Image (cartoon, rainbow over all chains, first blue to last red):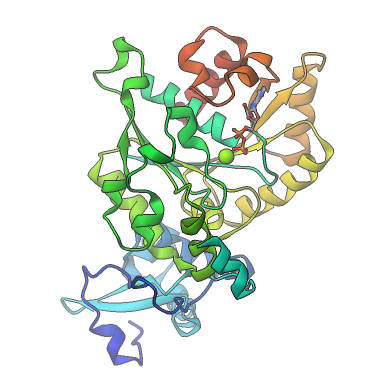
Length: 117
Length: 254
Ligand SMILES: Nc1ncnc2c1ncn2[C@@H]1O[C@H](COP(=O)(O)OP(=O)(O)O)[C@@H](O)[C@H]1O
Ligand SMILES: [Mg+2]
């Protein structure tokens, strides 16, 4: 099972919803789903299993894709490094979930946003 | 097993919201529990077909995305639109997007966490015990659209018989294939009576290598209703409604 090198990720509690922007906070940072379109097919298939099931183990992904674990593992590691997926540990079991996917803010002159408030 | 059905088109104004509301209502009339989420955050509209205006929307999808309420607080039971005989089992829930300029602008300006939207869909299916979750989308490609396509079990891509739509549809079909949508259908809307519908179907199916679930006629009656009601429920025997019924049946059959 691949290990995350970021200890803080592993302590994320199972039930905690993804962090959401507090009122009037700075914009969220993370990846865009559009990166999904640029991924090679094998990696994209992995992200999609996670998208559809929210929180899955390596074994779940392998079963869904009907591929051996050894074949999926390197791709999973790469997706975690890219930030598209996160690892969380619960009851000594490692789960994968989506990384911080965000709808990126639009750039528009401040005065225009002010007018739209 | 619940199913997620997304309705998309590459260009705007193709009839997505009208087709979503009508097909969803037709499936609810079969006794299914159906939710409809308006993810067209930039230009919401489907609420109008259920008699909603800004004043009636207390909590919107936007409120959920900003953490102001739970997703289930944004779901409105609009089942009373169903014909009396069908009310017992079938259910329709609407999850509207905000019509307030400031709310729309804020989503565009600040962005939001897309995984929250994904979680929201799942929570809706579970808490409302839905058989179908319909996702009405913004035209073109954006974050909401990509998510809805990536997680949908069935995707309807709407096009009009128009060269711009034909070209844009090729892009939409390409994305749907990349994202491996299990069941992909095309729906042609606003076909003129003068067309040979069968020839049109053959040509489109061959061009995109994708089944055409239905060809909806351009209809003055639909236009006259002007998105103020669900046409299928009001005029169930109309040719437009018959095609809607057939599309609904194909979705349920698969
Ligand atoms: N088959 C049809 N015949 C006539 N008018 C239609 C038909 N389908 C949709 N319309 C009209 O087209 C307009 C756009 O429809 P809408 O559902 O809002 O599209 P979208 O959600 O794709 O922007 C509405 O005024 C609607 O009444
Ligand atoms: Mg619409």
